[in-house]
Length: 332
Image (cartoon, rainbow, N blue to C red; front, side, top):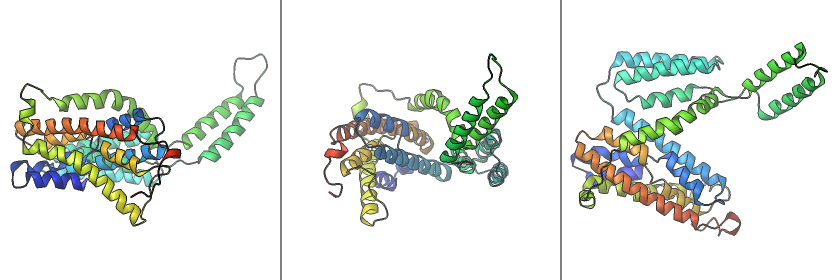
């Protein structure tokens, strides 16, 4: 994230457009993963996990940038109220509260408090997510073992010539319900409930509402400006260099290792796809600039960079050999 922001800032330093350095920082999770999925069938699952983690980290970073650098007119009273509800969520987690309604209702209260405070409300979503329990009460092996036993006990109680369950069977069903709840996390339950709404309604609406790009006959002449050039260079060059450089440093310093079955060609493909900054970058551009001309210039840059990054990343991964045929992972 730092390299794209630095490249943009260097191109636009000492101008009014310099404030848009946060635009090329984010990676669009949905588009990047969709392209990775259709690229080739033999891409290792670890590479998909890497891109997911990278995109999530980028978006979290972009949310923090929005909160601290693109928010104004801070109001302490609603902010204090928002933090108060956030503390209640933390306390609920510590006390073992696992009711999803508790986290949804108080989480909404936190969101309202942050919204009214002047801090961009996206930061509320990040903070609330950290307070929701993400661990199960029983692990997978215990759950599977107990479920088999309860299923066996239930089968033994099947009555002859009856469509109704016996009292013992009813009790077993209730035990299975409680066991299943203990094997789930509130965070996953909320995520799964929200996913269809986010994927099919909220995200498409968000993208359409923030795009608003008009491509006319003068399109290619209007994109030759510092904002568009900064965004394109930041997303294409900055993301590619940033991902490869920091991955290489982590491997060389032994602080990390390449994902299982992945090669440096896979990392290069992921680094290229990281330049798809469509959704969040559009959002940041609307917050970074007051002049509509600069917002439009940024949108042109985001569109061009995202298309080029998607194309390059797709063909790199498309022409990367299957793991069994890959070259030595230590090429670099």
